[in-house]
Picture 1 (spheres, rainbow, N blue to C red):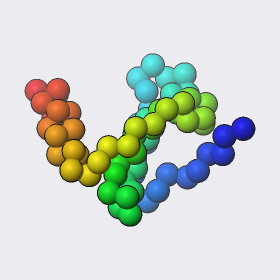
Picture 2 (cartoon, rainbow, N blue to C red):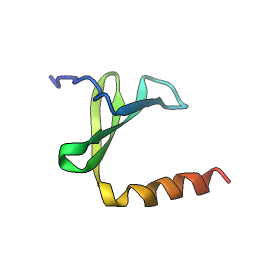
Picture 3 (cartoon, rainbow, N blue to C red):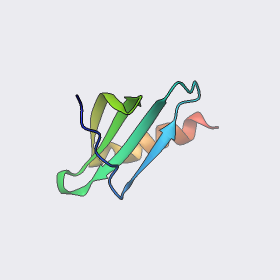
Length: 68
């Protein structure tokens, strides 16, 4: 059984538009200089990705461009 850890103080949770207990968590881990993006379903982490701090501005630009 996977232990669900609380989201760090510097992070957010986004609910999937499809519902079905799906969510995306984004958390900043300053000590490792990474952002962790994780996919959750029914309070179980189903996958994660560690993005280096230096790559964050490019990700932000990509997301902003997508809304234009």
